[in-house]
Image (cartoon, one colour):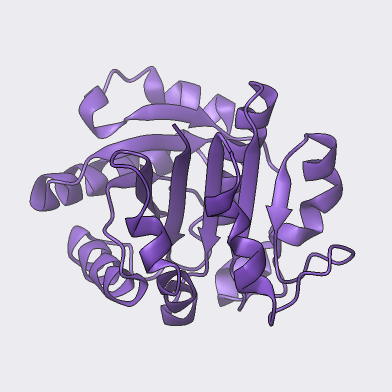
Length: 235
């Protein structure tokens, strides 16, 4: 059965990096994989910049900035239709981190609703060092706002807490504590904890409750962020 994963979350939560990693790992496992880039507001930090890498890894991509494929803002909806019409093993939707990004997802509400039961997951990517994600209350408020605009219900949280070039296992520990409380308050599970392998391994060695860790996902770094962009909210 086709698996469709929607990634939502605030600015610089790491949606695009996770989308790329999920897609590459899926393709390397021999699964037919498509990534749909619905982040139309962030021209500075684009998934389509990774087209050569994705092509090399046999991952297909639909993006409004996918030069050479004839995909533009005007014919983007028709291109996205391939996510539902064709026989993919995994489709990952990378959604912009604001109301506009969520609304771009909502136009496909009927297509998502027509998917077989159990084939759709909606993951809220959380970096507790970003605005709107510092506390369980803020996480749940922002999640609710995105759900309303996207017409989609979050099925799991992803702990992707990091401080970019200053990242450490302590970032994941702090994210764990906040998402544990968030999960208990909402009843929504933590489905993944992600990070660079050395930090993830150190965090996992602590022996914390797996219920609030989910499936660990070690990330390769494909998207390179500047500390200035992180600090000033440019991405």
